[in-house]
Image 1 (tube, rainbow over the protein chains, first blue to last red):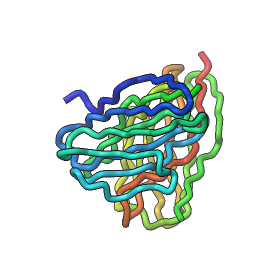
Image 2 (image 1 turned 135 degrees about the vertical axis):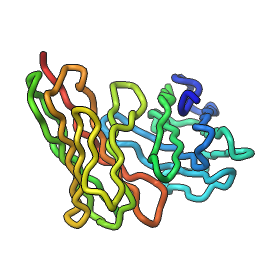
Image 3 (image 1 turned 180 degrees about the horizontal axis):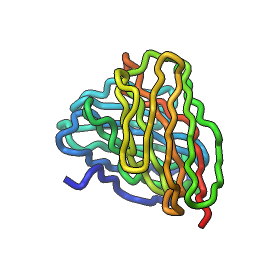
Image 4 (image 1 turned 60 degrees about the horizontal axis):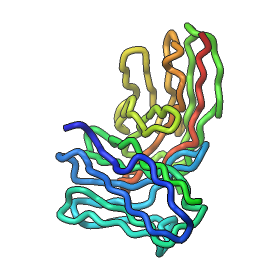
Length: 112
Length: 112
C-alpha cells in the first residue's frame, strides 16, 4: 500500500465550470476525510465518511460541493459552478483509531 | 468550540540549534493530538501522534509532549538541520468527534 492517493495533483479551471477530484485511501482505513487549505492557514474540515456513509459535513460545504464514497472505497469531491474563492488545496486523509490520520499530497485548484 | 493556536507563526534559527514549537487548545476534552510537517505546495506528513492518556512521544530528533489539563503541547526539535525547514502543524481530535482541528502552523527556517 502506497498511502493515500489524490488525483489530479493540479487543476486549473475557468469560473463556472465543474470539477471533480478523486481520493484513494489506505485500504485498511474505514474513515475518509476531505479538508480544504488556503495559503498560510491550517486545513479546514469539510466532510468525512465511515465506509460509504457520509457522517459529518461542515458548514463550509455549500450546496455547490458534493462528496461521495461509493462502496466504501475511493471518494470523489465535486465542486459545481466554481468560484474564485474555491481556489485552494483540497486534501484527503484516511484514518484508523490507533494510528491517527494519513494525508494525501492534495489537489491544488486554481479558478481563473 | 475547539480552537488551536500555534506560536510562533514563524521562526528562523541557525543550523544546530534546539528549538521548541508551541501549540495550545481551548477544550481539554481531546482524544489525541497529532503533529504534522508540510513542505511548500505539498500534503501533510505525520510526525507524532499522542493519545490523550500519554504525556509524550519521541521519534528520532523529535519529541512531543502533551499536557491535556492545561491545553498545551510542545514539539521539541533537537540539533536542527536545513532539511527541517517546513511548516509544522498541530491538530487535535475531540473525544466526541473524528475530525481534526488544526492550528495555523509554525513556519520554520533553519539557516545553514
